[in-house]
Length: 237
View 1 (cartoon, helix red, strand yellow):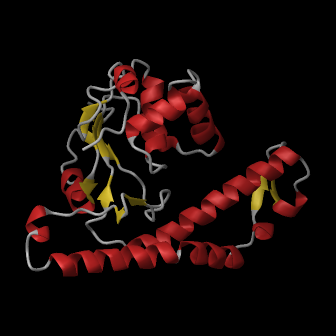
View 2: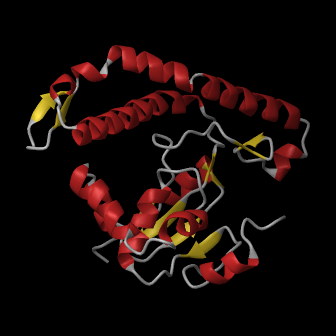
């Protein structure tokens, strides 16, 4: 299988991850703030962990602080505050395997790629990202299994934009309140500052998309192939 990274990229990655190609790896980048931000960013994008690091963190030494400032301070998502501990990543698991691992919670805390923030409509090498167990694929049920899973993903993918439009109609931006430059909650139509308007629009669009994906993710089969990474050490340990 071809590597996702060039030889020069691998050389860089080995300073920040325990390996460059395996699906199980430790995150060893020196700065804890970058580890935590990288984890949280990972749960909100369809890129692989190491690809995100190369694209977003390598060239910007302030990326960790910037991400925490945006997510923790502006949006109030304090779950990212506990991410700066010891991390082991596992990518390419099925949803079933993810839940099996997450049932063993003693001493560990978990983060997985969120189906609320990440749309699972993209294909890799012409195939949707669901688990293809060798026992199933070598059985008489292989064709039926593929047909069923592909149908689920087709229905999911074709309805994302329709669901977004539907929720926008039900919850138009004009009816929503946002904080202005003075910290006051005001209706969107009452915002005057261009920065406030852009920020409100961005927040609204992200929220509507998340609500849409939240509704549709129930269609996805349990063999949905999460790129999941786990085991941020619980901060009481």
